[in-house]
Length: 290
Ligand code: NAD
Image (cartoon, rainbow, N blue to C red; front, side, top):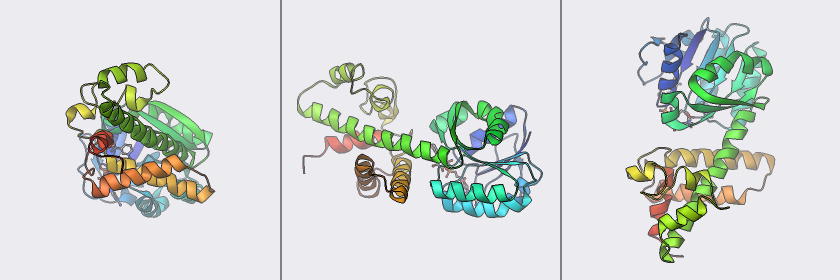
């Protein structure tokens, strides 16, 4: 396929490289990031979108996505697909999809989980919103860039799946960290706690796979002084998107709300910016009840 790729940062760069390595003709554009090897440089977004079968975007937020969509939509050919893999608000995803549909372009929102490691290794999970035709067209690309893709329904539902997943993750990581810090104060050995919880009803991905306590469980960012991994500021971004979405549909999400408040304090006032999101554990270790 002829593919355009806009947003060649930490995630987009390796994703574009994997598509080129698999034999697709990939043209890339970014305001600042360099083009990976095997990807042809375009001089602007519209040029990147011209004559491609699929245009992929991997951008920081919904406002930037909307502005890039305005630039590229007139350049896309009829029947092409606009595949946005960024994490953005549901409203922006649906607005861009409406704009694409009006231009006879297939729209897909397909945010990912798996982080930079998954982007490099081609093992991302894609959560996809859009039509059956769009999903079928993009499926071979998901299979190159990732190991799993789930069609979640119409446009916006990929973003909805992403923020629901990450709201669970944020709240669960907070609960896991506060439990470990409580266990410390109760004189309970961390390894013993892990051995119990990881095989009991308190188990979760946060404890079992990504344990926030160094030296316990499989290797995780805690074993590397909490170098991300999944940065706390990206978790805060996703939690804020979850609360924006909850507000828009009048959903009561008290745990998501509290997790958002805690990550906001952590990132903005407590030195959490640039650290892995599991560095909530040393934060709790240092604190008392008030
Ligand atoms: P990044 O900041 O490394 O990359 C974004 C790129 O977009 C940058 O290189 C920037 O120059 C480029 N860009 C911004 N505006 C542009 C424009 N108008 N035209 C062209 N290029 C433009 O961010 P990232 O870590 O690659 O994340 C990208 C998206 O993936 C975000 O939505 C993020 O929430 C999501 N995500 C990131 C991770 C992660 O671990 N990094 C995991 C899952 C999802």
